[in-house]
Image (cartoon, rainbow, N blue to C red; front, side, top):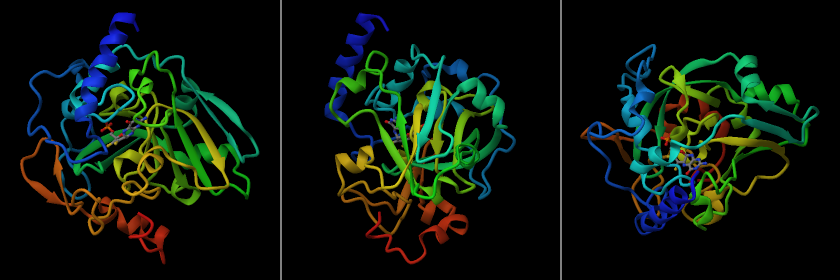
Amino acid sequence: MSRRKFLIGVGSLIAGTVLATACKGPVPTPTGTPTIVPGTGLCEGATASKSTDELGARLTSCNDVISYNNFYELSFNKDDVANFAKEFKTSPWSIAVGGLVNKPRTYDMEEILRRFPQEERIYRLRCVEAWSMVIPWQGFPLSRLLREVEPLSQAKYVRFETLFDPNQMPGQILGLLDWPYVEGLRLDEAMHKLTILATGLYGKPLPVQDGAPIRLIVPWKYGFKSIKSIVKIDLVADMPETSWAKENPREYGFYANVNPAVDHPRWSQASERRIGELTRIKTLPFNGYGDEVASLYAGMDLRKFY
Ligand code: MTE
């Protein structure tokens, strides 16, 4: 990134800090397709096998998916993330998988795409800020990669880390979070069949603003768990300290399961705004995936483990 662009980036980030809202509070959301969409070409030839999810909800338009983003390393302003994404380099890229495993190893992206057949998953993404989208991702179950490295019996959690590169990610100069962005899952959550690593959306490679070249998607949890642009995955014994839980433990828990019965301390989680639609809809427990995942939390008080 040129020095000028970098400085402009930092300036815009600082200006945006005052308004910074992602994971800080509900924000006004666009009600239609924005008129100017940076990187619209990314949606040319966009395809999906269906036009709705399994509950009959319409897919969010590709243009909305790629132009309304939370990616604080690039910009605090959702509408500006796509602009900062333009010069971000996603090649070469590799992911180091290690920690408590028998076979630690580093995968480069080409190998990941070759080794793990990609499949489409149409999932609802529910942000903790009470907006949501329905997105057709391409990816593969995280369990397939974890099985390859053979977790040891002491491994109880999985820790994920985003790239740290302030030259490309001006947000990392500012102290909003303790960078790099870190997320985590319990091992059984990570091995669940719904948990994927996504490498594409709408039949095309993942755009930078959505976490290229590879990100986590855990559809029954608030969106901040779905960490973008991953470079490191570690199997660990103890619950990892995750970025938002570290920043504000009262507001953001480790579990972060979508739960309309437990409000965020500053706003209700009972309903959500689907991006591109006018009316609010009711938020579903576990984001509508309860039949598949509720048993993971049997016996747990989900008010305490939020
Ligand atoms: N991952 C990183 N590294 N940095 C971020 O700022 N934002 C999270 C999550 N993953 C974020 C991240 C939040 S708050 C949400 S809601 C989703 O990404 C948004 O994903 P999207 O922009 O593809 O819709």
